[in-house]
Image 1 (cartoon, one colour):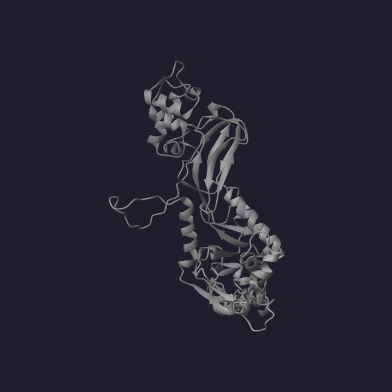
Image 2 (cartoon, rainbow, N blue to C red):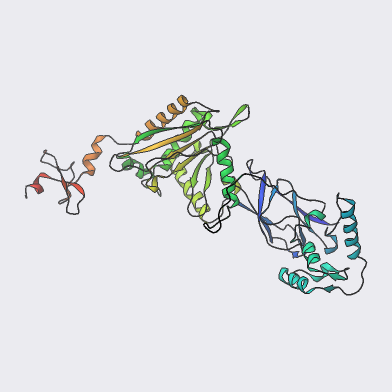
Length: 436
């Protein structure tokens, strides 16, 4: 048999021991060309396309919507149609073997014309399959066509690679279809639940918060940023990556009776812009300067929006940052992802108080509260060190009428707080106040 390509479920990430087949672009028996897209797998974080490596005929041993274990054979490409394993016997009951043997005989003993049922004809036409695939059969029913074209689960039971479908039985509330509209969870959402539950379900996580004073911080920080003006994310990523070398247990995960510490610092940042939640990896983050981190954030965000993320962009992340500063969030409790021991949450900046909240959730099995508190306090101090001294206030306070800044005022008396005509709080200089 000229086997041109054997397609197995790939191991794309240590988290994904099973993948979901979300699309099949041909039917068994169809001719394919090198480079054709054969099928699509879905992982917990992205999708993975499988292309044909040669011209030939494809046969599938899987179905869309089902999960299959890593290394299971889910499809093959052979050189000629007769080489497809359409009804090849496997280790099943004697009765089933007899039935398969009769099917093999029926597919090879008949030398006349093949007659097709109406339903089989419609099915073959819809699938665009080659009629020569049915040579050797005197009559082809709809059931025969389903089995040969690989669009029925019965086919998988008749191949050399019967694949067990991975199923999980859990107690669930049965919704009332008359009162609710039921929507199926996507495979990605199911895995998100599974991975987030992996650590949180132990009940051994804690959360620590701290305030970070942000007044005037963007006066200096924006000068170093090209795209992400008025954003703390590049700075927080930059300083966190350097601290993780000092606090390695936050760049680790619980592994049974051991703790696995990552050798590299690969920080991930969470993103969700109507394309599903993803955590994107900034590789070797501690080796990048502030500008390089900003560029990496923008590059990965562009790949996310263009659906061009690769597996390397989503795996081997040791520490995660979730930035909700753009969502007007006071504070929140982030959830630790699998194969991590901690996650950092960034809240919105309170414009009146000039501060934001940083929150760390951590795994007690890996580290302890005191160490995390010390880490968080040091991160706070590092971020606040980017603020200018108090003299910056004289440069940003200005009279709402003449726009003279407090630093440029020569009266040496100061400005008066007032309510501006638009109802907003503001300042007025002494000369404008007295009508000069």
